[in-house]
Amino acid sequence: GRLRWMAVMAAVLVGLDAMTWLVSGLACSWTRRSRSFPTIVAIADPQLTDKTSYSFASLTLVLPILEFVCDAYIARVGFMIRRLSPETILFLGDLVDGGYRSNEEDFDRGLKRLERILYPPEKASVLHAVGNHDIGIGHSFCAACAERFEGRIARFPLNSAFLFDNYTVVTIDAPS
Image (cartoon, rainbow, N blue to C red; front, side):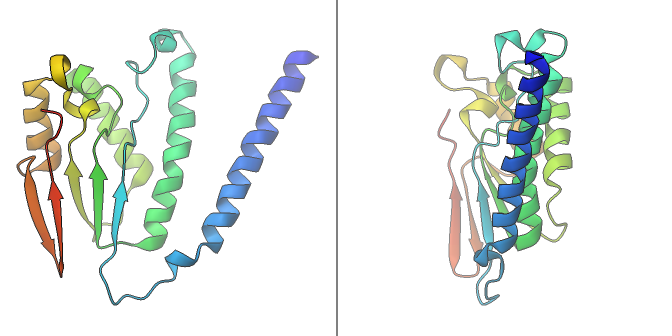
């Protein structure tokens, strides 16, 4: 009865949302641009949901459902990235929700999820600015997490500048 009706309505809403997004994404005019200038795509705060995101996420089926919904949403970004085929992708921090609260195994799992979902074009340069969910901030700042981010993700100092044609991209470690 009522539970079935709610499930059907939820499926209809999710389907309509996905269809609306797909139609508008395919019709988007900025994917048909001139190649006169380099294309830089900036992605802010993907914050992949993980077991640190919500206190109730430890419940048996809750975390897989939350991760599925989050991954489906982020996959939309990946779809548009591949359509644009940018020269550079700039992540503006907060890759995973609980980056500074994650152990190495959970952190690696989150990064692999993000890469699997987005799988950016191989020719694109990928740059990362650090965010508060990556290394903490204030009393939650984690120096080991900052080192982990700099060494395994950013692969350059967290405060850096990069020159692309006539553009300079500056990354700043604001959290620490």
